[in-house]
Amino acid sequence: MSMLLVEDLSVWFGGGRDRVDAVRRASFSVERGASFGLVGESGSGKSTILRAIMGLAPNWSGAMSVEDHSIQKKRDKAFYKTVQMVFQDPYASLHPRHSVDQVLGETLHLHGFKDIDARVVKLLDDVGLGGKFRFRYPHQLSGGQRQRVAIARALAPEPSILLLDEPTSALDVSVQAEILNLLTDLRAAQNLTYVMVSHDLSVVGHMCEHLAVMKAGEVVEIMGVETLRNAQAQHSYSRELLAASI
Ligand code: ADP
Ligand code: MG
Image 1 (spheres, rainbow, N blue to C red):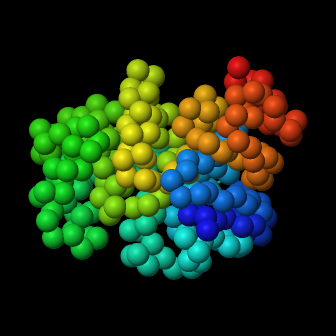
Image 2: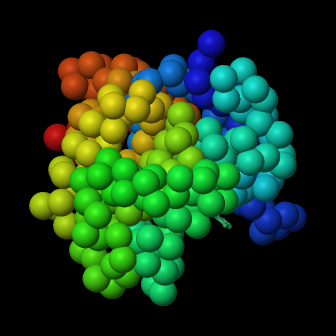
Image 3: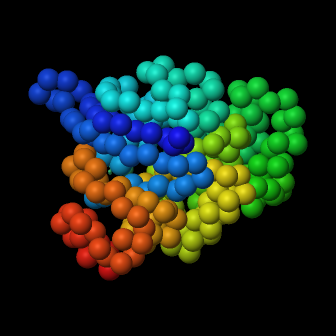
C-alpha cells in the first residue's frame, strides 16, 4: 500500500479559450516514509500537483488516495490532519499581525488539541527555534526562522505527509542547507512522507529517493535518485535537465 497515490491526475484552470491545462495525466506513488521529488522547469505544473492534492485547485480529474482512502472533492478535517503543505514563501504564508504563539496556537485549537501551551513549546523545539521565539511577530524573524515557523505550523496536526513547494528557494543560500537538514531530521524523527517540489536537481538529489521529471504539465519520467546521480536518465528531456544542472 502506498502512502500517497496519484493516478491520471489532470488539473486545469479557467474554461473555453482561456483554459490552461496545467497538469495532464500525471501518475506517481509514494511509499510511507519516503521522500519523492517533483522537478521540471518553471510552469511545468509542479506546484499545481501539490495544490490539487491539498484541495487548492478545484478543477481536476483522475484519482488520488492517501493510505488507500480515496481523496474526495471536498476534503474533511481528517484529511488535513494527515496531509499538510509548506509553501515557497514564508513571508507571504504568515500573517504579519499574528505572533508565532497565535499562529501555532490557533492551528492546534482548530485541530482539537487541548494541551496547546505544551504543544506550542514542543513544536518550537522540534523546528530548532525554542521558546524564546514564541511571542515574536513575523517581522522580528529572519527568512529561515519564518520558514521554521511555517514548518512548525504544518507539523501541528501531526500529519503523515508533508507537501513541500520549493521550501528553501525564497531563502538566502546560507540558510537553505539548514532548512533542508531540519527537514531531513524531522522526516526521520517523525516518520514523515515528503513530496518535494524543486527546480534544483541537487536539492532533490540530496533529499529524495525517487523523483518525477515534469515537462509542460506531464510527467515524462520517474527515476530513482541513483539514476539522477549517475546521469542515466532515459528521456531526452530529463537528460537535458541534468546536463543543465551540472
Ligand atoms: P511550476 O510550479 O512547475 O512552476 P505551476 O504549477 O505553478 O508550475 O503552473 C503550471 C501552469 O499552470 C502554468 O502555465 C501556470 O501559468 C498555470 N497556472 C497556475 N496557477 C494558475 C491559476 N491559478 N490560474 C491560471 N493558470 C494557472
Ligand atoms: Mg511552482
